[in-house]
Structure formats: C-alpha cells, structure tokens
Length: 444
Image 1 (cartoon, one colour):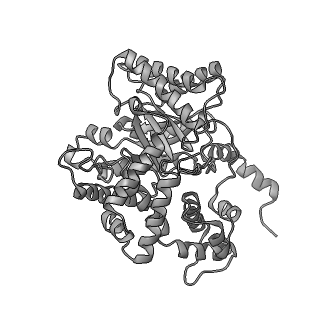
Image 2: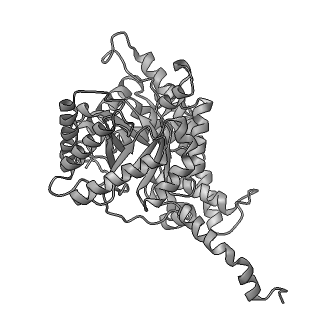
C-alpha cells in the first residue's frame, strides 16, 4: 500500500494545474501541416501566372546541360557518388522539377524589390495578386504562396501596409483567395510589431471576408533574436495558425553583427547561433523554422556574359552543402532565389532523405512493434525522430505507401509516432494541398 493517501497527493500537486495549462498552451505540438523544403522569392514586378512551370523548365534546362547523368549531378552537387544512390537522387530531382518545382512561392515587395515610385508599387502589388489568381485558375499555383511586404519600420510602414491592402484586396476578388496564402513580415525587432501587423491583418480579413491568414516572421536583426521568446509567446497568443514560421535573414542579420560580405552565409557561426535560438524558441509549438539563402547563383552564359558551366556547378555545390548542413541541424526549409537552385535544392533534399532511410524504417517498425532493433534500444524521443525522417520522406515523395507497407508500417502509425496531428483544414492558410502535374508537367 502507498504511504501517501490520494487526497494528499492531489493537494500537494494542485499548484501544478496552472503550470500544466501554460505548458500545454506554450507547446501545442505539430500542427500536421506539411513544411515546404523551400520558399522561392520573386520580385513583384517579375510575377506572372506561369512563373512556376517557367522556373521548372529553366531548372530542367540547366540540369540537362550541366548534370545530365546521375553521376554528373552527384559530382556537381557533392552528393553520394554510389550509382544506386546517385540514380535515386537524380530520379527524384527530375520528378520534383516536373511535378512540383516550387513548393512555396513568395512575391517580394521588400529587399528583392526595392524602393519604387508609389504608382509603380501600387500597380505591381495588384498585378502580382491578379497573376496569382490566374495561376490558381490555370492549376499552376504552388501548395503555398504569399507576399512579403515592406517592414513596419517608420520609413516604409505606410507604404508596406498600403501594398498589403492592395494585394489582399485584389487577391480576394469576389470569391476569396486561393488556398495556401501566407504573409511574411520582415525586419521584426519587437514582438509588438507582430501584434500590430496581426491587428491590421485581422481588420483586412474582417472587411474582405477572409479566413485567418498565417504569418511568418523574419528574424534578421539582433533585437529579434533577443526577443524570440516574446515573439513566439505573442504568436501563440494570437491564436492557432496565426504565427506559422520563423525565417532567418542571413545577410541582414550577419551584416548587423559586423560580419564582412565575404563571410556572410547561413553556415557562419553567428547565423547558426540565431537559427539554433529560433529552434529553441519554436520547439514544440508547431511553428516552422527556416534557414536562409545562398547568394551564389547558378547562372551561365545565357544569363550573364562570361559565366560558364563551372560557375553553375560551383553554385550548385555550395548551395547543396548549405542545404545538407541545414538538414543535419534539423532545419528542413530554406530560401531559393533562382531557378537553378531548384536543382541543387531537390538533389540535396533527396540525398538527405535517402541517407539512412532503410535503417530508419527498420528501427521505426521495430519500435512500433515494441521490440528492440539489434543493439539499439530506442526511446520515445528517438521514435519521434525516426518517424520525422519517414514523414518527410513521404512528404517529398522519396518514400511511397507500398515501400512503407513492406516495412510493416502505415501513414497513420508513422504520424502517431511522430506526433503529427491529422490536418484537415480548408482555410486559406492550409499548407497541405499537394500540386499534381498536368499533361505538360505543369502544376494543377
């Protein structure tokens, strides 16, 4: 018989009830939404309805010219040279460039767009929204898309909010925006900026009849890194699905710390410190964390005089190195700025997912069956990590249901072990809709 009566234990632990509630609110867990492997940024004046297939076709052309065989692509991206692995990576890359070259598209009115006359930015905001609607009607819109307006800094605040208003008004039209809409708020330095932006957005949603739209915060100032706990807390207070991501701004952040241009990169220790802090702040919240970009672009002589195939392969290798390093650190999303980076992105992602996948399936199946796998005694935390690997492989299409079943697993079991809730939302910030190819290989 226990020494302590039940009522005594209840009395002594009653003080933990509000703690339990606070922890549950602070760590709601995985939302079940698919995290894209990248976000592709496009200046607003360059947006047109067929931009996604156009990027895919340009990426295909670069692949055909500079990485036409599995071994060539593996060498160009620094991937695993073993023939079976190289062949699998090449197959995934070509498939992704055809079926879903861009998973997340962000129209940019901030740094990538710059300062323009008000009339020009007004027109570009509206035209970009209309192009996105046309892309959706033609079946060419990615599963996730959105806008990065200018920040809430005083000098550009009014301009940024005006563009946001024009964009959302045009995007909503008479029947509402296409699903998958997300907004990126840049250069955040204080949690109150996020709250004000959400208030403005809520008023626009009310007047336009929109469902709640997800917000991403760009962490690109030292103040933002120091404010991460408050930013996440504020995001959670705004309600489920409002704050959906934290994206590091590699170049603004490193420049603010005095890092010289030659050393600005997402693998610089200062930037990696920031992304680690972002991971710590977002852990268990369902808020996704994204790495930054590589500004070494794979351009050849068709785009810049004097550029060569060596320049393309050099850019691919560097980009793939950064993607692999990010994945090894638990950062599964980054930025892509050029169609050629789709090649190195999808190749590197496939390589990361294929590495150890067979072992992960075997260990997860053994864990699910509550039996030890060889000399490794896996705990629940390891089970979640193994399931996370498998879920990302399923999301990317590197793993299919027959192979999953052959390992003795199914999607429901893997999702349960990975802590992923079933996601059936149909609101505008539903990120789970998968694009499929039409007869021409374009998305629909």
